[in-house]
Length: 115
Length: 116
View 1 (cartoon, rainbow over the protein chains, first blue to last red):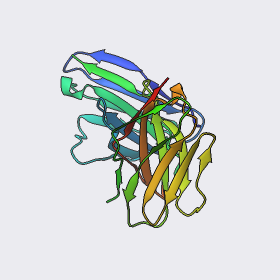
View 2 (cartoon, rainbow over the protein chains, first blue to last red; view 1 turned 90 degrees about the vertical axis):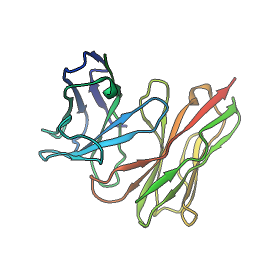
View 3 (cartoon, chains in turn purple, yellow; view 1 turned 180 degrees about the horizontal axis):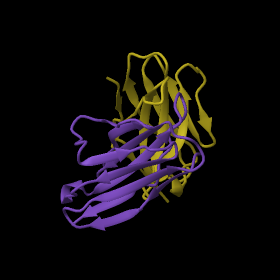
View 4 (cartoon, each protein chain N blue to C red; view 1 turned 45 degrees about the vertical axis):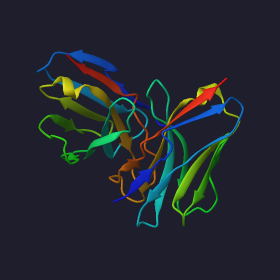
């Protein structure tokens, strides 16, 4: 399978601060990046989809000004949680895609805890 | 819109036995992909098996196999000779064929427990 890294794996921050999560596809070029969040014992919920060099498309109910996504290159995408609050505490997972019928692979995830 | 339904929130199996996880989906598309992903306690999503809708033959990966019934829109996963390491949350997922923007639609998951 593909190699995907996410950094940091865990982060604890104070309410009101911003947190940046990096996702890298290490052995292939990702034309599309999907960002998910997952609450305990629930399924993955898609937050947004981004194509390299373009603005992200957000799912209904996801605040684009709060969750800033940058997909500046075919191997790197970032998710910035701005002015984080305790309700933003969750598990965030990136998923790069090469496109077509290619299998989607997933990063190892980032646990965010906002105090 | 496509939907994926996993009707078994939890399942358990004895080590070395066989278990089948159910999944049904709804779509108006004729060309698509179906996947089973495993999420162990580490929470890393791991691809277990994938099936192309245009292929009639059921996919198989070692101890994992699927029963793909396109007309019934059913895609069950069979795990043979269950091992302790198979304990995890299993998600069934659907993806439309074609462009890279097409997203995965997940079921709610089935938590599999393997008893020694």
